Image 1 (cartoon, rainbow, N blue to C red):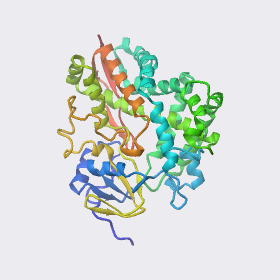
Image 2 (cartoon, one colour):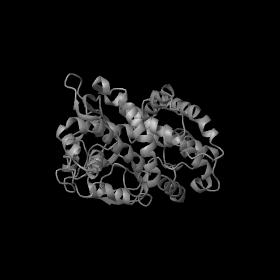
Image 3 (tube, rainbow, N blue to C red):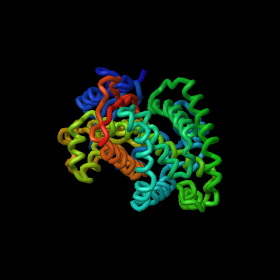
Length: 426
């Protein structure tokens, strides 16, 4: 029998028990236990303090490594083989950004950061994002009420991504892609845990293959690299993005990851921002009277308080000290990004919205360091236009007291739902 690691969560239970439950009390227990605590249910060290979370991000690729990185010497997640992991997580791409390290990763990250330029984001803001947001609002504005997850959040990001990728805007087609993403995410929620139900694995592989069949024809259409959508740009710049030995599977894999990241992770952030807006009426009054800076800061506060991913698994490449704990090579750490973004040692009144908070982007919603999300610019623009559209169109957005109240659902990815509101047109 192995020696129990200390400190550990045995006195207050595993983080697994916080699924569909607000985790703030659990985070306080982790903090009280030292901020670096072993969770037997996850088989990982939970890391909650701002400084330690930032240290993990800063030393990504040096001391820490994404659990998704391909390594034949290490068991792949969910009990999958190396080949299965490439098929599922990397969509068959040998140069996938989240499964590679070093120059292969850096080259892709650099391309995405350059592609999401301020000029391109402003173009999408004006020509795509705001029109899509207004079109979704038009569907419920006259009724005076809506369930903003189904009626807005779940619809906005997929239609924005369809626009930037040059994909169909057909409702049934987009809805099917969203359903398949949810099936894949049901398996990804088990990242870091043992005992994955076998049916989740089978369903996730079927969903992965169907996504390929749905997106594949449109990826193939852009092969010339002459279109200005993101898929066309990838075909044009493939050697720069993936290296001289790139394969067609790299284009397909990156296109599918682009869809999954943009259409899958932004809806929870949108729902969370709208929950914050609807649940705190005084904020709406403040934002109606405030300037553009306050609106942007509100978006950052919603990301800080309710980031889309609550932990980001890493494997330790060599012994390292985090807080008071010596973490050994090969062990897993889970930086609790939202806990770090609410650290009372870092933020004054950490659970409150402060539209004048210094350094408003100083949080971990998009992580930190070389593995920071390269799509953060697009996500921020979408959230800003979402909030702006709601403020422009409605004098008030309130939680509907006659309907089921929202709950913070999920575990790794969390969002407030359902989000029943009543709205008052301006």
